[in-house]
Image (tube, rainbow, N blue to C red; front, side, top):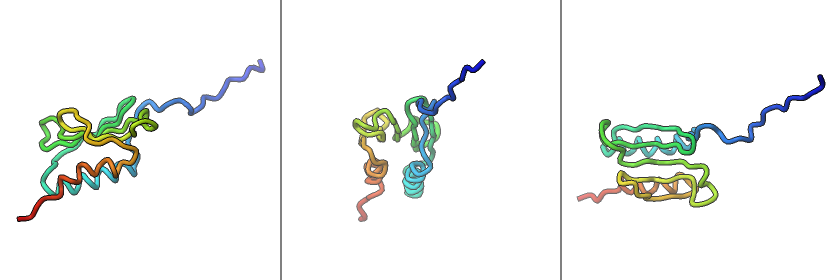
Length: 113
């Protein structure tokens, strides 16, 4: 009658990986600038068991131009953030989201004639 039931701990991994509010604010800031420049038109967010993905589209009915991925399992290795192009090539990977997104900000810089 004196048996104790252990309280479940929160030490287990979350069931889904998602972007934090501060991460989304950095991503949506870049997204807004690219929309204003006429480069991007739509986006989608996916939260899966091991990865969160922010996909960027030029048009709604096509494949994403870029995917911004967050993989917490790679936090201690190459970095948990990555930008991947339409062909599946990793353009940039790192630990800091702002640094990783700089590869996309170069698209905003154009020569003025």
